[in-house]
Length: 387
Image 1 (cartoon, helix red, strand yellow):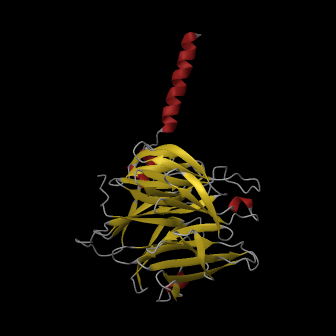
Image 2: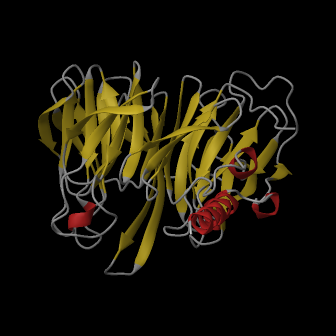
Image 3: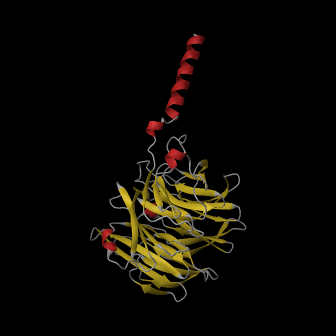
């Protein structure tokens, strides 16, 4: 009987090992496309990583990389560089950032932050945080916003929190409760600002920005702004630009400004905003404002001057190619070349597109990405070959 039990346990162990390891045939290889001519001297920015969200529930978040030196765009680099990671990147890639020598990808519905080596994109560790959303850094800590509860619409959804992660040990060392369903964050001085959406509690959205004192890691106030907040962007003058998505019915999406010295709302713009990124004194904004009344998106692009607080351009795509973009889903600006990048999610379930525009808004090149291309981070380190 004891021998039979030992045999059964051995068989189970072998089966677990077999299922836990992926055969090379199961790994979808990366694919590369030459999109521009090689540049032997690309400058300080060597390339960028693009995180594709993948449709929720499909476990199809993927990572792409563009190399300025070779002019080559490579899709799906994570799988073949990490054959031992069974589920690859996981379900819904929600943010990607670089800090030190590590690349951090926030994987929302898989409830962890994937930590990679910036030089190789190889797996280092994961930090388990439920329903994690966005990540920012200061000193030796990472701060990750978390919806805290399960991924579901629930009028009784709990308050979210911000997790404080030691970037050396990659352990959560503290948590600070904030508002409902917290999203993007920025750090101004010793204060962390968190946009609370309340998206799970529709139609009772949150309308506050939480302010956390990083010395004590406690919430010290909430700033009333508008309903269903999402994006935050800090400018060079200490102002925090805030996006409100509205209610998708009669309350429109707008953009607001908070003065981080006084923690008061100083400006309101009738400018819809789905996403924004800052380069110098310019904030690039796009909007795919959905209406349940018309059952369609209204798409727009704009540039705001942060010094004058004026909308200076109502369309930063100048060559008519915006008509080829179905659903703009991500925006980034190369801090050195000032090239503008806009991603297109298409129909959300098939490969998207990435469009690169010159600073004057003229299309330079386009390439096919993974599903729902969303988040770009530039790197001054060249990704090493695995060959």
